[in-house]
Length: 197
Length: 197
Image (cartoon, each protein chain N blue to C red):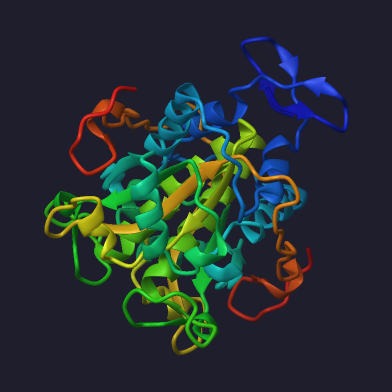
């Protein structure tokens, strides 16, 4: 069981697993704003995400302007299922750090597009988990690349994800949270070989 | 500050942020094995990762056989920098769930390759954070796709990542952990516009 060393007291052993299992997509946000100090913590978690060869191929654009948020939500696949959040953080895969070629790991200090996307996924997940710890609701959104124009990205920048943050409205729409069974997802030693769990 | 509802006691507010910031790559593993119950928790965290349209495009192959691990480490970019771990979990982007085309979000129940990689990154991160909570060391490794043959994947399967788990050797090689400064990573409202943090 991990110990919170600063205070020297025991922590429940399933804290993270519980955080990971209870994270969910929020579809309807209230008007309540997110504190600047919390935004900073969310960005801090993103910054410390792992990346291939520690390239850290990301930049983060924090958007609070209502009109711009409205415009961004229109670029999102299934964006119409969501109400507008009070804040969006768009994650930029910056042109200095990737090349649109196949699988490659840090050639000429640039990642391939595949590794780039792996990294962006990890920084996004760190953000939403940190938000959840702070009691802040979130939604991951995939944008059309006309988002680049809205956010004044440069040639070669790519914005694979944007993350909406805020607080869930009362009686908000809620999807059933479900996952495939573990035993259908796991093999032992090689693909398709059953493994006792 | 979040409350651990089961026990009704207060949790330190920065537990997750601390977990995210202290996660690191382990280069040298001891021979100590990872308990089966811990492997199950790690897989459970992976299973609950977010994915685009909840497609859950993954399968997990748990490898413990020493010869196979040795072979897998040879497929990894920079694998030679690591000693062999006692266990590897390879994440398969399964052929039923993706198509090798550009950005697309769940067309015909298949993700595009970009979304596929985003999802794989998130399941991997959930695994290594859960491992860290359990005191288990890890390393993310990018394999060459000849790994598919070693793990008997099917046509169209892709293995973007494998994750090594175990316990760090005493006096193991350690890279300096560093990240770009937050102020150099964050813009407000649009790309390149400075934002006070």
